[in-house]
Length: 302
Image 1: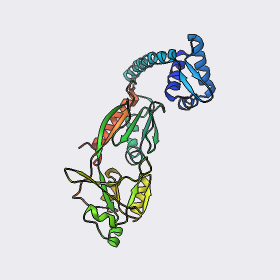
Image 2: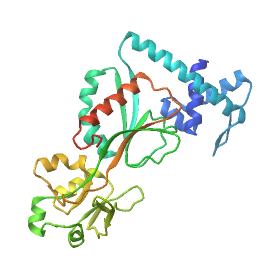
Image 3: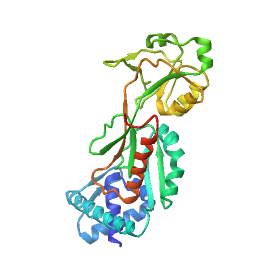
Image 4: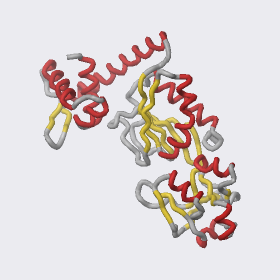
């Protein structure tokens, strides 16, 4: 048995909370994961995990062992990374998680430049609009839009964005252009549903206080790409993150409305586990992302 492989497998099982999930993340058969853990327990002559058909819990001895080997494996990764850096460029796979809008509209279009600089680094990009447990899912880092509510993570603010209220020229020609937020209640609007299944309110900021406009949307969707598509189809007025509509506004496909009323500023952060050494491949991706956001007209920090 390779002791380092067994240690890494044990850490992944503990953090994933499941043999099956750990096997999927490690791309190993579940039987191999089970064999490695059993071999580790036999060598140590101690039970590390209590497992049944329905649950998995860590024994006190297993918890103590986990805390010690996490630091040991981090130190080993740091040594190996420093050695590789002295010989050449970072390499390996980086697992990233982010929202659909940031993934498809910001990260993916710019990846060609990343691969030119780091041809030996592979990206596994998971896109979704629900916050995942980055430790349990084995994610190296996540890019979060909005305030970070997760506990026990490092959150580095890398950008800001606001929302833009807009519609197509054709829709405005047919239905009129609202001059104040209050006039939106008489217009056909489209809602963007949050993770709780409720549409986000249209918010406005007058410089001192924030207000919301109560709207009865004719359509509500839970995906930013579908939200933009609905607006471009002339179905109504939307209030979307500026970086998702910037191109359409520049091209004249959408018209920016209510420019005298600002919307609140929201942060964008890169998030990673605090008890993990950031390998060279993860560091270069984070640094590249920071630079990408600094260059982006609609995402750079205010």
